[in-house]
Length: 299
Ligand SMILES: NC(=O)c1ccc[n+]([C@@H]2O[C@H](COP(=O)([O-])OP(=O)(O)OC[C@H]3O[C@@H](n4cnc5c(N)ncnc54)[C@H](OP(=O)(O)O)[C@@H]3O)[C@@H](O)[C@H]2O)c1
Image (cartoon, rainbow, N blue to C red):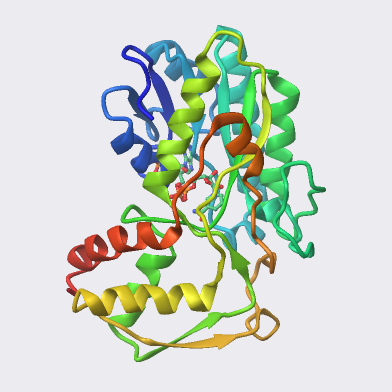
């Protein structure tokens, strides 16, 4: 999945989970740009970064990603998830390069009984989902040569994510309560990064014309409580902290932002057009858990 020598990919975001994974997976061809050099609220800083690094393609991983916090900080979420991506798309258009923008399963309401296809109707339940959906439309209106890549349930050794949270909780608790009726496709960030770089490669090829919206996620579905149990099973193998998982229905576990019960993304179009199929999420878990245990000092 390596890019040809000389291809330069500008990744918006430095410390985030996918930003770090892209930086590692694309070492030598990826440049990460983030705050304070670049701020999604400052359109000039976005243009300056594109002029400075002169990339062949831009991947935006940055945004307002705190799903519950977005409910009380809607204006900030709007800046980062709508205005910033629109300004990035316009800046890419100005210099004639393609733009890949990351989005989310949270654009859907989760009521379908099958995995969501890219052209299924969006109906976000939360402010986060609504701003990401508006951001998708802002990008599509601003630049023809774009990909919107929706992803789901991303985890890794990098930044904050569900696996880190579970392992951290297990240090101090014997039991954790986790929702058991939300289903999705967990996605290992390093595998996701490989897929995104392959897409970046494809869009830089002469004659590429399959612009639009795609889904990219790990193989095999699970629910959050089962995912948590799997995390602790892997942790136990490495002598790490474990907790018992009490499953709870979403209806009995209110959060500021509602989540879709069905977060499954149908990735068939991505496989057809790009030939990309990500591995089973459990493969990523065997890599992420021992690294996190080591870092958290619980191994
Ligand atoms: N994590 C998931 O489970 C998940 C699921 C579905 C979709 N997604 C989408 O995937 C993408 C990547 O997610 P992630 O998990 O990597 O997110 P993350 O770990 O929360 O990272 C967020 C990134 O946004 C950047 N950022 C925040 N405010 C900024 C600002 N004002 N200006 C510039 N950058 C700013 C951060 O910047 P700095 O580097 O400067 O700190 C960080 O790199 C996002 O679009 C997210 O919506 C994620």
